[in-house]
Length: 154
Image (cartoon, rainbow, N blue to C red; front, side, top):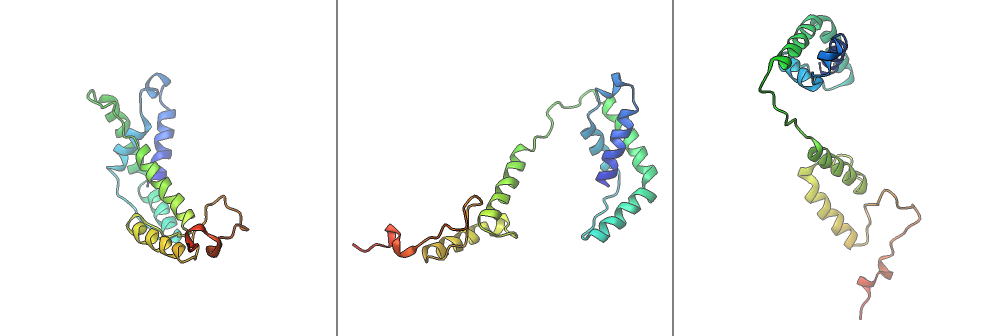
């Protein structure tokens, strides 16, 4: 639904006179319209294609109307907040998790499993079994536990 609503918002805003269009925030119109349309979820590519087809055929007119109403609503709201949502922090968190997935070589890593994965990685490293690699490290870097200063007796 999101893909179709965003496209409809762009199309309708472009058809407006430029004096009006410049005062309309497409994100606000999109949010307004999506909140008035059914969510169409899918768990597979085939399901997504079905839902997309359904949205294009069954909900085309409703999408058009919801976007039109959204444009009117965001123009008429004198109390509209200027404090838009800022997703910088959320994006940083997602980026950090992605970097940890690469570093720890755990594609299915989640925040819930992070402590366990780090603990296991540290234990494996302590035992000389390196199960992680910095993305920039070359493949010929080999860790030799016997030569490491922490393993020297004395």
